[in-house]
Length: 86
Image (cartoon, rainbow, N blue to C red; front, side, top):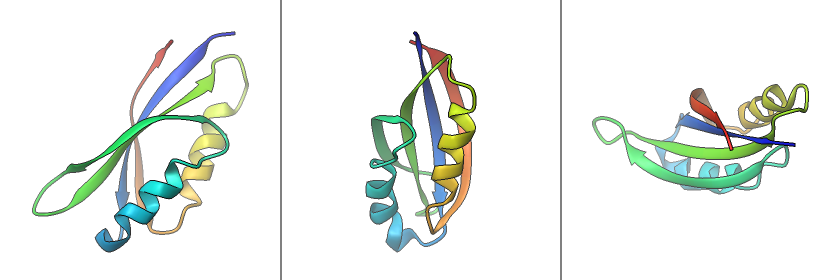
């Protein structure tokens, strides 16, 4: 069975909680955490770029991951920036 690498850009409502949200994202259960970093966006606003690995043949794996990400408090926007087969 193959795997899919998903890359997300995540915006946080309160920039003071950016690190806490970042640490919580690393503990997502519906996917395997790959890597992440905090990047400057504009005017002091930062976003989290994070990647996860999910199985490619499991129905609903991506929606379950995105639902779990969106359930984290203080996240205002989740944007899928890319995906590729591994």
